[in-house]
Structure formats: C-alpha cells, structure tokens
Image (cartoon, one colour):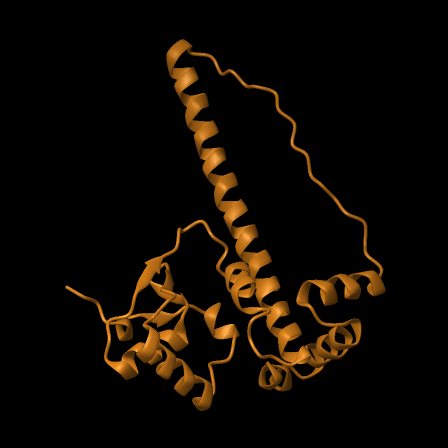
Length: 192
C-alpha cells in the first residue's frame, strides 16, 4: 500500500520556515515535471521535516513522491536550520528569528535527550546493583564522580556577536529582533 503524503503532518521544525510563494512553487512544479523529483522528502517520526514544497509540487503533478525516513536520533531543529538557513531567500530579520527559534528548540530537544539518557543510565545502574545484591547479598557501589561543565556569563556584546555569526546575520539585527521578540512576539512572528 502506498501512503499518500497528505496522510503526513508537517513537523513543527519545518514550519519555522515559510512556504514558497506561488511563483516559486510554480517554478518547482515545472522543474519536477521536466527533471523529476531529485531530492526525497525527509520524514522524521512520521512527519515531513524537509520537503513540504516538494510534496505540494508532486501532488500538483499527481506523481508519487520519493521519501526517506531520517534516524530517530537526529536533532530535527538543527537539521532543518542546517538545510534551509542559508539556501532560503530570507531577510536578515527572518533569518535571525528563524535561527533563534530553531536554536532554542534545539537546545530544549538536546536537554530532553540528555535527560532521557541519564534516566536510562540511572535505571541500568540500579538494575545492576540489584543483580549484584541478589548474587552475593551485599551492595557493591562503584565510585564515580560527576562533572559539570560551567561557563562564565558572556558579555552581551560577545553573546550577540555569537548569535549573529551563528544565524549569518549581524549584531544590529540580533539586538532589534531580540527586542521585538521580547516586547512584541506577535510582530516577531509576522516578521518570521
């Protein structure tokens, strides 16, 4: 059974980037009709992570789209930024606000993955201790230190420079868009 892509939802990370306008979508449809679909639509956890416009073009042409499923361990936010951050036609303000959203959500995704890993490690450790208790009636505890890397506070200027470099914009855009996102998130969403 072939599943139609209309059965798939868009992943929230993909939705950080705007869809193509009608003119660009028409160009994509024409290109795919002449050259075929060259890049597969990327699926992550059953949702379209990259290729929303390709999906629309294939639907418009009535052709079965090519897809590929991405591994579960990729960071979807970082993946989408990497693919689209530089190749999309975006203003500096859009580019920064999209980078900011992807970066923040990527950090949250990574923290959640770390939490899941630590919880799994804790459960394995507890299970191993229980097995040791069952084997000889005593509890063997291995010594192991936990280290935590800390970083000093960045100066606002350096932090803004780093954000500008990562988002391929400039410090002025970072300052303006951070202020807009804080003071008027509704307008920042429209700019994005």
